[in-house]
Image (cartoon, rainbow, N blue to C red):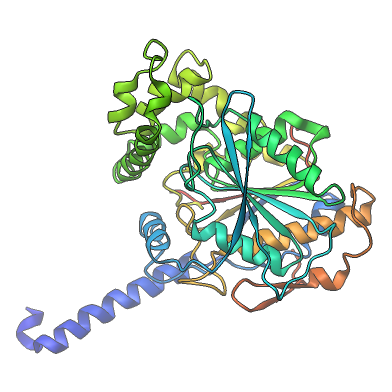
Length: 427
């Protein structure tokens, strides 16, 4: 046996070296170009020509090529940059309250009154406090954009004031948020990016608005797209852990506001809501009943953003088989980017890896900036002036202090001029 010929120290070194070589080899094997699906029209080609992060090979990180490992590693170890907000809350017709967090710009950054505004929609139970959101906020401000985080009801310490939470299908709050931001910044181009459930809500909103959508560019990240497939995937192997953790967060939000549901026992299953162990259980007890869906399956089918407009290959929560590739190919204003790995909200790659900004931050900022310039050049810009120059796009600032040079080559619903959908490959 090997240990009969090696000292304990030599044996340990051999094992560790073997593991390290295996991890490095796996990362090298998964370092490759992302899958890009898009129509080769002049607008899309113009935008992609200034998106070096999307066009360059995705650099997988050693030891983090497994979707579960990358998801958990990013969630637990990613550093959260210092970002300050000013909270603004407004009431809704049902008595509910929406809470927006406006980025309080540092003294070193001075943006004009008509600077573009980026509306951010975090994932299920997420909010402005999450590291992936904060990284995007910081990067946006460094590249001339204001950020507003739309916290879904009950998240990010926002109190619920009516017996209505949020859902994958409900876009009423998003519509109110866009209207409010328009009134606050009437001369600004509106942009939006969403993660996970927030991405599903954003894509549904864009699809419902169609050609009249006030959003000029949208990015959908880790979108489940088909909620029925995503629900089935939650009950496979290790994915059950994510399901239980997210269900616990939903359960805690409900318990904190259970008093709002007193007297509504005929409509809601309050016992199930207080004790659910799966997202499906909570959706059956509260969500589908709030929005009058006859069943959970009907709610999942009718709320899937894949029916509106479409979108890393090892994302355990937003599986690749839910991606409507053909529909994306048929949409002249969208691109689909599928990275070879990345987990769910992980994307440990790029200049910030492994503990800094995710790969998606730089990719989205480059995309948003390039779309704005292409809209201006093609005469499709709604409000922009000539203040956006080639230099502003060719030198996109990285949230981790680096700069990327922009010299890489690279259906009727939801006709947003710039639609960017990024997923991770699932095997």
